[in-house]
Length: 174
Ligand SMILES: [Zn+2]
Image 1 (cartoon, protein in one colour):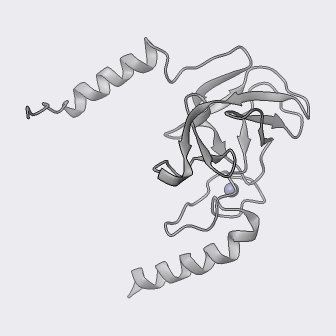
Image 2 (cartoon, protein in one colour):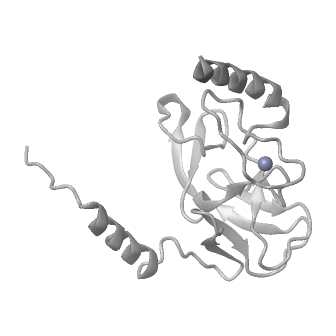
């Protein structure tokens, strides 16, 4: 078996910039939504125009994975009893908020969609509530909303998450 020579860190960064800028993988723009920097060290999806409540914001396509042989990420969405949808670009850049402006709906057998649940002004970041179950690691939320739950977990999982975080805190302190 021949060894693959690893890309140097700097060369990888340079080539990634080329992918981003020249090939547009991280600069998706469909006229209604666009990928932009959130200012922090991450990307998000932004409204290019205004959306009114009930309006479809975007379709979410991706890789369909059998639950039976699931090896997806935490970002995976449930399609039905047998299948998950692992969001592809640009939907993979959608961020969570505890005070979201859109919600997830199933659009077809293989795709999900985001629908506006309030008025979304042009330039606003598109967010939805990930509603994760309490996890063993601590998914801190930095959405910055006044009603931020502190973690990227569903409202009814917050108590469970608090317990896990407390246990982890203790372990760290001892
Ligand atoms: Zn939050």
